[in-house]
Amino acid sequence: MNVRTNLKRAVRTHLRISLFLLMTASVILPAYRSGNPVRPNVILIVVDTLRADHMSTYGYFRQTTPRIDALSRESIVFKNAVAQAPWTTPSIASLFTSQDPAALGFEGEDPVELDDSFVTLAEVFRDNGYKTQAVVSHDFIGTKLKFNKGFDSFDQSNAKGYGHISSPAVTKAALSFVEQHARDRFFLFLHYFDPHFDYVLHPEFDYDPDYRGSIRSGEFKDSLLAKAATMTEKDRNHLKALYDSEISFTDEYIGRFLDELKRLGLYDSSLIVLTADHGEEFSERGDHWIGHTKKLYQDLIHVPLIIKLPDGAARRTVEDDVGLIDVMPTIVGHLALETPRSYRCEGRSLDLNGNAPPEPRPIFSETRRLAKLQSVVWKGWKLIYDLRRGSQELYDLNDDPEETRNLAAANPRERDELRAFLWSWRAEIARLRAGIKVEPKRPIFNDVEHARLRSLGYIK
Ligand SMILES: [Zn+2]
View (cartoon, rainbow, N blue to C red):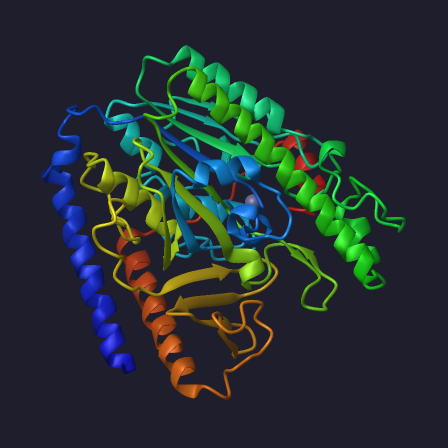
């Protein structure tokens, strides 16, 4: 299939989706006809910095996520989900609004406020009679950046910086909410943060007990980066073992939350979505970099996406490429939620009933933090374009999932096809920006918030 045909198909798909979204605003699907049957409670869990390939759910060699594995056995597991950005604020902004980060005004190094003109998922739930609650553990998705838009109550008390272990308190706050609102219809957003650096050993999940090197549990990022150039393979593996320990610790607390939901009789009837905002890298590229934000390899943008429907009978895996940008229209479409006039999604509404596979569509990601990169995934191929250098990398994700062989020179047909997608996507965003007039606003953090963000390495 040539570029023109693909572009035409993508445009056709886009029009079809836009038409579908227009229809959902006025035509209520039979499954959730205004309250009969009653729409379910919805719980959206985001684990910060959780690489899909470090979860046993996604085939990792360690049993890091037994609790999420159990959830996934009753869920739709999207094998190839991609975040739209490799750092917290733009990625979750995209999840909350179904907009590309660039369309939301993320055009520089700094986080920007969510612009009032974008409808959030929480707003849609609130307008449909849901009680809306968030429990978050990072200022970068907090009230200063207006991520509370649409939430009746927004608990940010666990945003305490890198040294704080937050999973127990997030679970406690979540349980306190569901116990109080067991008879209400609610949308609950939970944001777990512990896999984010620093990487702390939880003794009950010690995956490298015999290690005797210089890497310590809880070591801050600056210290790790200073050591990165001289790290041995054993050191890097130990770092990953500490990261895995944080994943398992978080998994256990998510499991405890789900256990309590079952005890309260709320688990079966709830629609539960579990995902992550981005992944993490451990010097895989030989450039002695540890963390996230400045690359778009799969380590950074391949995230879990697991959706349990209320009856739990929909266990299935989906191989198609999807993005976090698809989550909001998928939930809105599946529950036939009524939406305001200004509701406009850039993602697709995926069919959760399994009647139709999603129409293939290129999935885009971007970062402008410590780099200027854009990427597109399309039918097993991936192009990463460096806006500063004008250079490009092409990978065959089926043959080379670790992205070690750049095929940009060897496969010009695929390279040019994917680059044409990127070009048309950029033009589309420019058109959207011209229509909406987003004025990116940088938040002003107080001294305490500033110190916390500096401790996380987010600001200088
Ligand atoms: Zn994050």
